[in-house]
Length: 223
Image (cartoon, rainbow, N blue to C red; front, side):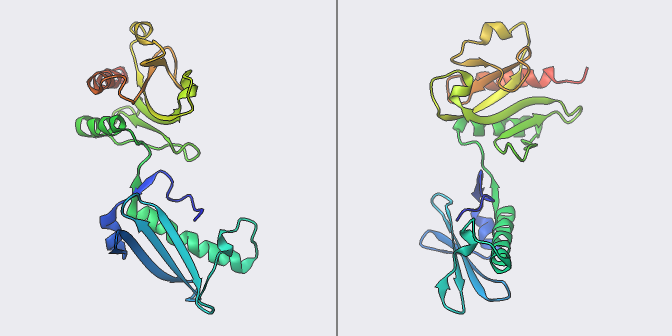
């Protein structure tokens, strides 16, 4: 399957069942007819890791149909099958899957902390940057935090490993005393005079991160 509609998402298994999926030996399966009943489409989702597999069968021959997955395949008929195929997957993605961009335990803890204390949810504002999200104050829409996924190398570290990071507002007077290139970094994609970046890898205790997040929230207060 080469559809991107499930990127950075995880299945909600209760919603899968409500949608019409059935569970058998750890696999959630959904079968439907597409293109006026000419094809049967089966969608399998693993309960272990959320992997999505699909099979489209031409009912006139009982053979698998794959041309809709071939990028160079063209023509009105192939296009119609591809459109129906994507429509089904998009509906499943929108109704049964949830955002799951950030993988680290610390990222999940921070998200829960903000949700419980400020009632705010991450906002994904850029379709072209699906791994970038922000929190905004309700009273003035100012950002007080951002979560991103990026390579450690972009922070000046000697590694291409992908990592969750958080950007926070910081008192400019305190900023120089924190940045060390190991735990605290010059702000990535933010004003380097008033923001700071922290890797959510355990190098900075979660309590310290939440304290700085609270301070960032106050710094974003309407003046």
